[in-house]
Image: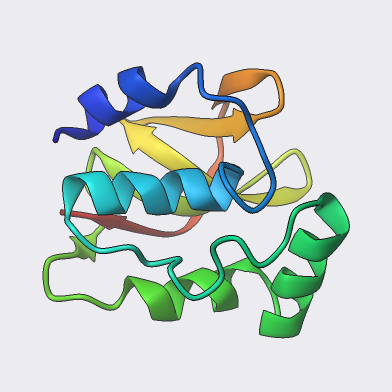
Length: 124
């Protein structure tokens, strides 16, 4: 599946901690487009903001949680499309990068992030 098709298919799916939050939405993109689930070991282990935050803090931050799970020979550094850990609005988030635009899953749907700082990103 292409990243564009994945984004269109999942755009209206509701945000849910532990099932379809910003990080798991990006992991879903990798699974749909590449064929492996980088979040398999923590998917479904939390169900609210506090549980999510505790998981991220135990890992030492979002990048420390995500980066080791993105080691796979099918992935390469971020190009025009892919997934990324980014900084925006004083927050660290996971987002899909599509045609150079950063999209994040929020409780109100997909949101385009203006001028994000890409911390790390991966393409395929």
